Length: 139
Image (cartoon, rainbow, N blue to C red):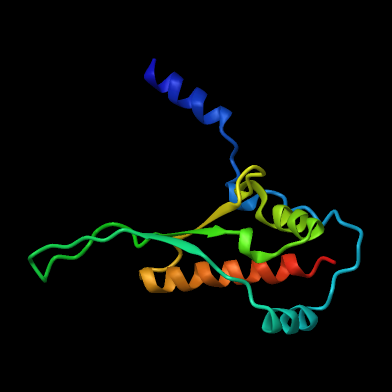
């Protein structure tokens, strides 16, 4: 009986992982600005980035003890200080996909790719800067 429930549940789940799902083209028909132009604009007027970084910490009196938990880093970003136009906000919403919540000015980026928290934090910062530059390419 339990095996029937387990196999029934397995049959309902999709066999392809979420990261292998289809990626759709950019649906916007306007020409994008060049990346060099956007970088020059950002250098003249940089955004005020406000991040909320969450990392797990484990402290033990024994220095030989290692932390068995994964070094996951979660970064929550405030978009209000990015000074985006409506088209740029739409492009950012498209780039964020399911991470974007229309009634909130925050989005979260999570990294668990590396074995160190510092590298995962650097990866999150790289993702955020790429998202910012790509969203600013819209007119």
